[in-house]
Image (cartoon, rainbow, N blue to C red):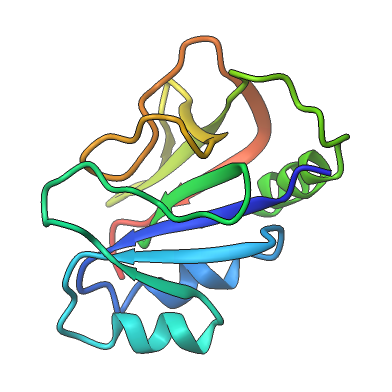
Length: 158
């Protein structure tokens, strides 16, 4: 089975990180890449058993020292919905020989002042660990990504 490392990118996210980490039951490893938080972000992440890695530079493309070949990236403002959690867990039970170059995308629902909206274009989030990441730490998009069932929830408020 292809184990997954969940990776969160943070900066002063103490009010949000607990909600994000609460939804991460599927990964074999969770890494928080922190960009110099001065609040309780790191302490809270440690309480959830996450491995903490300091970002190299504030705006550099991050490197992720993942133990596994597959990473699922999210921010502290996001949480994994129940159906997506089940999809990721089922994906992790696939045979270890997942095709090279494969990646997966997810639908993102965003909280707005008047409710929730679903972004039209899914976002690439489950990728091989050597996949190129953008400056925000999220995977560079792939138009060929396989769509996973379920939603990633992006909250407006902490």
